[in-house]
Image (tube, rainbow, N blue to C red; front, side, top):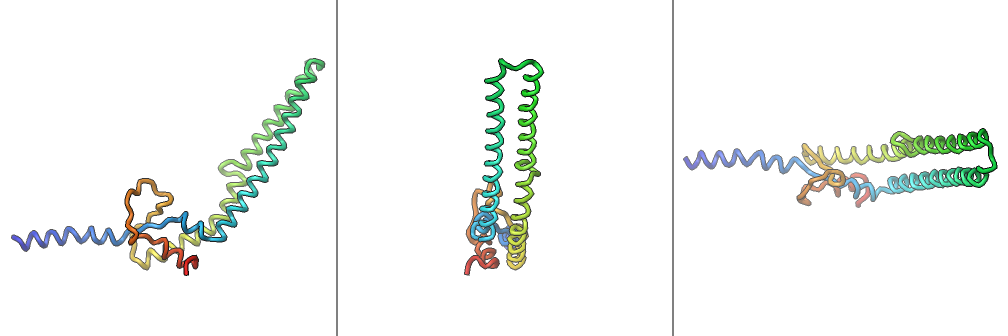
Length: 171
């Protein structure tokens, strides 16, 4: 009877031991922050964003000036002139909002440029993660930078240093 219970305990503990050894985690934020090409891409995107924001501020000032001129001259304009000026202001506002969406929207110029710059870098990191995970016999690898709900992690399962080493970020 004791042998049966002992054997059952061993058999039940094997899957837990195997599961513990086949999962790991990485912190992609840590990895990416150490990659010069990633920080350069981020800086380039930030400069581009500021450039667009400045353009929009200038265009908004032009619209505000048109509106202020219209307000000050409104009393001296006839109905047709008032309507024409209002339509011009409204048209410029709509055009600005549309351009804003084209540049800052989910599929806008800035998002497209971000994908162009960052996706190749993320692919390099993913390839390194894949290689390290395969070498270590991992079945699952979590990214603690994006995974919500990780409440405990053992540093023995951290693959971040191995991935960074594979990428040449750690000697």
